[in-house]
Length: 472
Image (cartoon, rainbow, N blue to C red; front, top):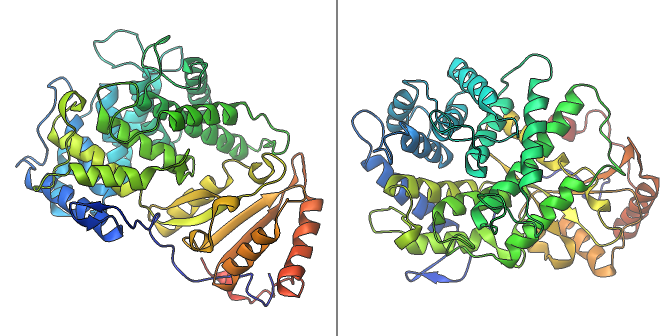
């Protein structure tokens, strides 16, 4: 920290992506247009709410499924649990315990998003049921009446629900959580195809929706297992740690990049908007603004707004239509709402030693989750490639995180970009990785010299009464 401005900024993060340019229905795709689409979708769902607080079911054997999905979408769109319509919906979906994997998972996620304290007992019952129904191979099946077979779709939703339950503090004795996530990790590792993709059935060619499910699930189990090791007092190995799961995730993302589209479920003619919801999860959980060369949120928002009817509903066409108009609109609403969460920190990806910028793969994800709890609001983070960025891209977030152990290979243009970011109000959060297998002395020495080169003065320790120690 020094007097020249490598320091605290009180500016708020702007929307995750400032969309400009392409016309849709004669209007530019920008933050206001996306919000208008969200508001119209919310309006459609609220108008179609039934007197009992729910929405029509898609299939009779999945009671409360569509209603739980719609309630989850409305909460993520910004409606308060105290909103009259949402309050009625919560009363309806919490009126009974469920047994099907899809429905119990959606109910759990909605209750966690609404008020985990109020619904603590029901969330715990659901979590116990999901833990008990996990199959020996680490996956989940349909649940009651469908035998012991498992599939990646049910397994994805069960894991999402357990992830949310663990986040809100559901406790188990001994190492139950670790066993659940270890088994789940093995399931997804065994399910991955050689080309990186995931299919619905073993041996089939990969699908976009299932590949997104696999990526998100591997990210979740990795973060959960690392967090459990840390909370148990175990040493978290940083430098030199096993990169196997990271490599698996990158292989799957590479497949998704090659097959990327927002107009259909890649390699499969059905479940278009189910895939769109899964695609948002990949972008957000992996911290990517781009999947390959595709600005996934911009392209997805552009396409969804183009699909939207005048009454606000968003429904896939033809064989892609799977579900009913309420579940379809809810999937689209989840993409639009969750994908535009405010990004509070960028992790800087810079050229140099491969992977040196990313030794702590879940660090920023964990920091963002911690901040979400403190601020009581949903937030996001992303990786940003220095070689492909402008200062405007860096300034989309108030904090730029840079980490490493070795001397970064920064060009003169890179240094000028970082300097301009700081001079325009950006905050550099820099970590020289030390301990647990890391030796960041060379990185620290380089950065100290870099500060002098950029600002003509060295770093200084801050006094105890500096405002940064008391600011969020």
